[in-house]
Every structure is written in structure tokens, then in C-alpha cells.
Image (cartoon, chains in turn brown, orange):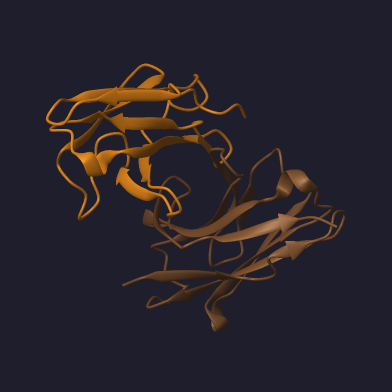
Length: 121
Length: 110
């Protein structure tokens, strides 16, 4: 069964770059069955889509974050990554990676457990 | 890309049915049949309940059902149970290959 696991620093300083990796298990990332995406949730707030990537490297980003976000993929390592630059305290959140079913940017079907990232000096 | 609008809270008693709404625009729910619903318990990752407006993924309870009318989607939970208490989020595909979420609805089982 498909599983996802986030990893990366839990504390990032303001103005620096937040970097997270999602490791995918039990499925080949080159499958056309899934897009791969990132979603975040600020403390006590709702969900926010950050962006998504296909195994070909094709990406789509939330317009409100596009200028600061880069999502990349390494299918040989079964990983995809998130980079968010120039972070502020407003970027403090639980970051989830997830698969998007049917190879389309529509629905997140399998989620990682999430990782809390705090932006603080 | 504005967030979808959900009521902050709904409540119901065990055994009852409740319906919660998710209102979008003519750029998302109004023109696409790609609404999803997620359940989230405290400290846990969201769980998919409904996709493409009315479809349940394998393993999702048939007590959950979805519908849509115009730019408003709805989630109905029948036979309300204590374990249904939690937060519910809708999402929709939006123009230019993007996804937008609602602000979430807190369900309280009385």
C-alpha cells in the first residue's frame, strides 16, 4: 500500500529557505496514476494547497505562493521535495505530502503524517 | 484564488443526519465536477471521504455522501456517530490546474 513520509528541519530562521522531502513507498513514482503534492496547515487554521508535481517534472503551484515555491522530484530515489524561500513566521505550519489520485490535480487520496515546521529566530 | 466558504461549525445528535455546505464560484465548483471532502481528527492527517462530488474511495463509510448544486457542494453524514466528530474540509479543482480548499467546518456530536 502506498505510503508517504515527510522529513526535514523542524526549525527554520526567518528569511531562510524551508526544505522538506517526501519519501514514497510501495509504488513506482513513474506511474501515471498519481500526481504528488504538498499541503500545509497553520496552527488552528485550515488546509492550504502549496503545489503539485508529476513524474515528468511538470508542476503547478498555488498562485499566492508561486514566487517562493519550488517542487522537484527524484524518481530514482522515490522522493519529491518542497523548497519555500524567504520564510516568515506566517509559514509556520504542519506540512503534509500526499498523492493525488488518477494522475490529475484534483484529489489527495493518501497523506503523509505531516511534519511541523516552525519559523523562528 | 479565494478559499471556498464553509460554515465554521455544525452539530447533531447521534443517529441524526447532518449536511454541511461548501460554496465556491464560477471558477471552481460552479464549472467543475471535482469537489472532494476530507475528515480530520485532532493531530491527524486529513482522510479522503468523497471525490468528484459523489464518489467514495474504497474503505470510506457509505454514511457519507456528497452532492452539488450550482456553485455549492454539500456533504451529508447519516446515522451520526461519536467518531464522526472532527473537522471537515472541502476542496475543488480550479482554473489553471490549481486546487482550492475551504476553511473547514467543525462537527460536534452532541
